Length: 476
Image (tube, rainbow, N blue to C red; front, side):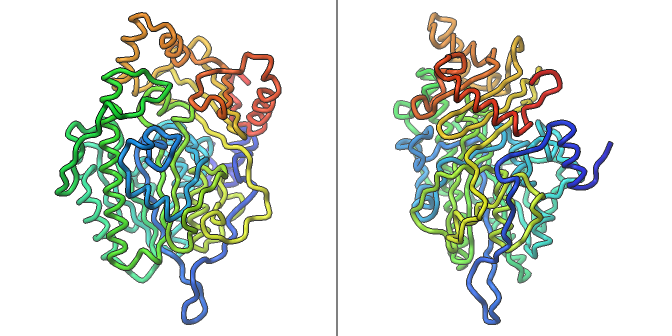
């Protein structure tokens, strides 16, 4: 059965996952046109820039609770955060690249755009390039696409890089393609997506030099080993190489911003930076733990207040309606699962509808059988994960490639009882997990089986039931 419209899409969602109550379903774009007035009194619409890193999570100097605060060298992004708005509770809708990036391009949750794993977005789903073309914007993309089918994502300009391409991690290539995009100016405002691969595995082994810069690799002795991992030389070495990739990505971000400034486009541009999912380490990418779905989000540029911080729950699924809103496009109220947070970056009046007090995420697969579907909700400081994994052994590609996982396995086999127990819980995931992030930000202490926490557990169950995203064919 094929549904060719958004109405049909909604019916399909009702059949399989029930009525969606994801963040912002009831609200839409306000359609106000930001910017200053032109000579004829019409608003000048800003250029829009979205920068997305690959497998980064909150590993940034400006995120004190992330992996790298005080160690990883990301001065350019730290400076952008200081001159704009830094979001402390931004989340990916999935901890896998294809469903997460497909949500960016559609404004829909994975259950609604169809790419719950590595599938293509359904052909009836309206995507980023189409929305912005209708809004009068010239569209561009530089780097990876991260969604399927490639032909289903139209852009006026595209410079695609594949993971094996030398250019994929080249600062100079990104700037050259930016120049090529800007050279095609046709008078319309533009919206450009730039995707960076630097922090995706495999990590650099040469310190990740860029341009003509000579840089020293990050010192493994100084890295921050997250509490979920194990402090071993192999772990420190792998994190240090991950940091090296982040530093090169940060330099490329700076080069892109500098090139726009040199063309006097900075004052007329609103930019945002985020990542698609968490780092390719255990207890992070492909999981619904905080390290897998908690994302950086920084906004700066025309009309954005400097030095601000927002604790609002926002999702990558909100990016498309927000960018459309900033560009003056009024979208149908039922077009997106996300909602516009333009008021949080533009200083305009907040919408009348209360901002959501919870955030949801989903996981279905990561190319390794069997699929272990799970759903999560965070509200306040409570984090709840529901998995359908009893009796099934969880595995992902990270476990097959990671030096960190191998080092942890050796330590566990060598008699580290606590580590062995934690790794067993990771592989044989409990059906329910509840964490108090205020006391346990690393999610090490599962409270779901404690009677003392029956009230927040019941509240978490209720919230997930109401979203109906948790409905599965065989279990509730």
